[in-house]
Every structure is written in C-alpha cells, then in structure tokens.
Length: 170
Image (cartoon, rainbow, N blue to C red; front, side, top):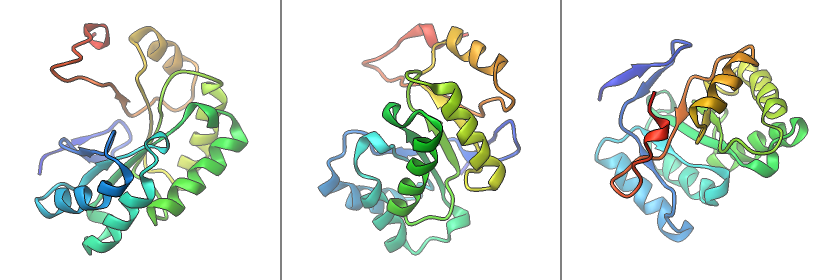
C-alpha cells in the first residue's frame, strides 16, 4: 500500500474504501470484503447512517487498530461546539474506536468555524489524528485556512466519471 503524508505528519493510504450509499444491511459485509482484499482506509460519515456496521466489520476483521485508517465526517446539523463534541463521541461509539484518523466537516454549511474549533480541541486531545474538510470549493477553503489556527489536512472532494467538476481544481 502506498501512503501520502498529511501536513501534520500522519500517513494516509492513497486508496480507501468509501461506504456512501451502501445500505446499512450490506455495509458490514462490504467492509469485511474490502479489508480482506487489502484495503486499510475506510471512509464513512454520520450522514451515511452506517458507522455501526463499519465498526462491526472493523471488529470482526481482527486487524490491528494501528494498521487501519478510519475517516468519518461531521454532518451539518452538528456544526456547533457542543454538538460537534458529542457527535464525535457518538461516532467513536458506533465505530468501536478510541480515536479516528481523520475527521472532516462534511459540507461548508452552518457554523463551520465553531465546529472546526471544537474539532481542533479534539485533535489536540488526540481523539482525532488529523482534521479537515469535505466538499469545500477553493474560495471557501482559502478563507477557511486563513481564519483557523490549524490548517485542514484534507479537502475531500467527490470526483468520478459522472461528476467531473473542475471548480475543485487549482
């Protein structure tokens, strides 16, 4: 597996398995299959409603925690300080983990600055190994970077043959 080193020194596999649109009833088996063929990076989100099933697959895999890279995302209705703190606790419980490797703001809506400050606190506590954003257009990302003490490690953007939005390119 090849890795990329994030801006804080964390190593992230360059290939990951995402569980968006996988029904909860199928998620555990799909993640188990992905892990069995060598995937070590799993991407989920609170809004996918399948974190518990991802957690079950992680547990049943028998793979050491330090060999896995788990990403989840903060949904927009949790984008305030108290809700962000509680949301991570809920995600960790569902995933059966003590920390996540990457925690992202899912979309640039609601009070993202307050949510990011809460995420920064959790990062400093070690409950998140890296923090970042998802679905931010370049202008929003630049503003966000200029107005936060911790630069996001990732801006995860959707890109595939059916969505080739070049506005994400710099």
